[in-house]
Image 1 (tube, helix red, strand yellow):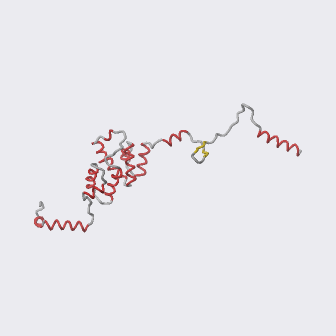
Image 2 (spheres, rainbow, N blue to C red):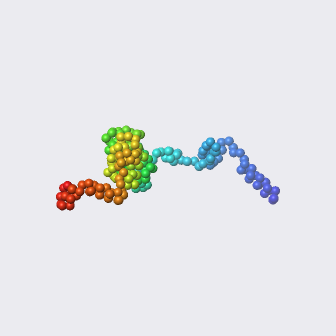
Image 3 (tube, helix red, strand yellow):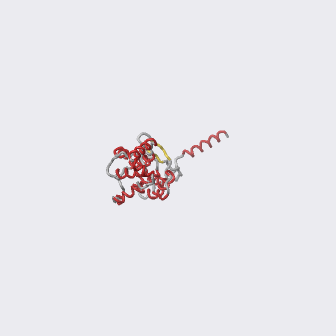
Amino acid sequence: MRSNGRVRRWLTAAHWFKKPACGTNIARKPAPCVRKNRHTIIATSPIPICCQIRAKLPELPAARKNRFVSEHGLQPYDADLLTSRKDVADYFESAVKTHSNAKALSNWIVGDLFRVLKERKLDDQLYIEYWPIPARHLAELVHLIDQDTISGKIAKTVFEAMLDGNKSPQQIVDEKDLKQDSDQGSIEKAIEKVLTANTAQVTQYKSGNTKV
C-alpha cells in the first residue's frame, strides 16, 4: 500500500511536468507589458490602448473651461471666452502663474487686451505667439493695482504705454512718476499747499461763489 501511494504521487508529478503534445492548446495568462528604460526593466500590467491615447491628448476646451471655473473662481461666461482659443487660455494661465488674481487678469484680457488684438487684427492668426503685452507684464500691472501702488485709472495709462515697448509696468510708473500717494499726511500737506497758493479763490468760495 505504501509503495502504491508513492507510485501514484510520482505519476501525478510526472503528469504536470509532461510536455504537451504538438498542437495542444494550453491557456496561458497574458504576459505583462515590459517598459524599458536606460537602467532597469519594469514589468507592468497591460494598459488599454484607449487609455494610452487619452493620456497623450491635450486638455480639451470644455475640460479647461470647467477647471478655470473650479480652480480660479471665474464665471462660466469668462471662462468660455478664455478657452475659446488655446493661445488665449495659455496666455491666461501664464499670467496667473505670475500673479494669482485670476478674476482681475480675466477682466483685463477679455476687455482691454481683446480690444487691442482686434484693432491690430492679431486675432486673425491661428495661434498668437508674440503678444502686444507679455503675460508677465499684465500680471505685474494687476499686482501694482492690488498693492495700491497705482489706481485703476492710472493702470489704463500704463497699459497703453506698455503697448509701445518692452518696458515693465513698474518701469513706466517710475519713469512717469505715476505712483499714487496713499499717505494721508502727504495728501493733506498737498491740499494745504494748493489752498495757500490760491487764497483769493478760497475766499470767494467761502463767500458763496462755488464756480471759482
